[in-house]
Image 1 (cartoon, one colour):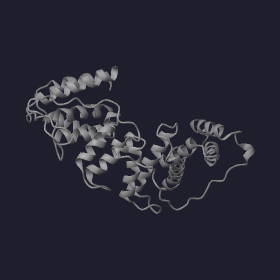
Image 2: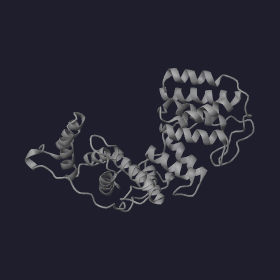
Image 3: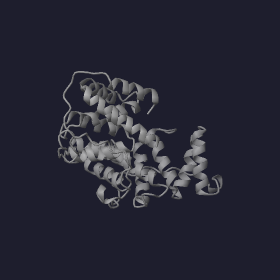
Amino acid sequence: MRTSNVIASIALLGIAVVGIALSPAISFDGTRAPEGAAGALPDVTPSPAAGSPSLGGATPLAAVPAAPAVAPLTLPPRSAMPPTPQEAFRSGTQALRQGKTEQAVMELEYAAEQRVPGAIWKLGRMYADGDGVKADKARAYEYFRRLTTMHGDDSASAPNARFVANAFVTLGLYHLDGIPGTLKADPNVAREMFRYAASYFADPEAQYYLGRLYLVGKGAPKDAIQAARWLRLSANKGDHRAQALLGSMLFKGEDVSRQAALGLFWLIVAKDAARPDEAWITDMYTTALAQANESERAMARKYLEDWLKNRRE
């Protein structure tokens, strides 16, 4: 969190505004803390290790559903390629940075055909994001599907784990919304993609999306407690979108026990990391700050100070 913004946030919390009274602290499981007891500090310790039974004991997924095949790229003669697949991967990524897109795609495709995980993921991201090539979700889907099929049951501590986890998340998003003319939307499949990456790889982005599905009841039964648990895991790892949703849930006390000060704390942290196009986060923060009373602001300020101190240590 930027220092100037932290100081501004703390100063704003010190301004007294007439609002609702501070409610007793209540835990995530719905039990009420003893009257007069201070709310527990937000959990800023590392989340359970990847694959921990406490996260649901995920097992490797079956094969990811196949989308209609896309035409393969034509590769140049082998002699035109760098001597090894790994060198082709490195050369391809460098060529992409230099704007040599055709060379980059050819070298990365060669490395991908030789089963280099980073090359498969990079090609998927290029077509998913339109990075140097025309965006093509169908082609991106096939790259990510190939990566998850090959490496979905690799160790969560493997060097390529972050690529594989991101591939599962992206596949989940494609199944959530569908790909016109290629893939029918299926929120249930999306949920399983997110759940696997969230539990087996402990991926914070997957945890955010899984929590959001439980929050709105899409692809999963609406369950605010499950939503809060997954969002909290993601928030503790720094996903500002999860911090915002969790903060709003706790501040409002809708479907979960109200913890206004803790909710305001998370909204402060999320607001500072929000991008310019994420006005919904700033709006949540502004509304909560205006509604919070002096006691809630003071407690949120204490949470923020302790959180910053723990980050420095």
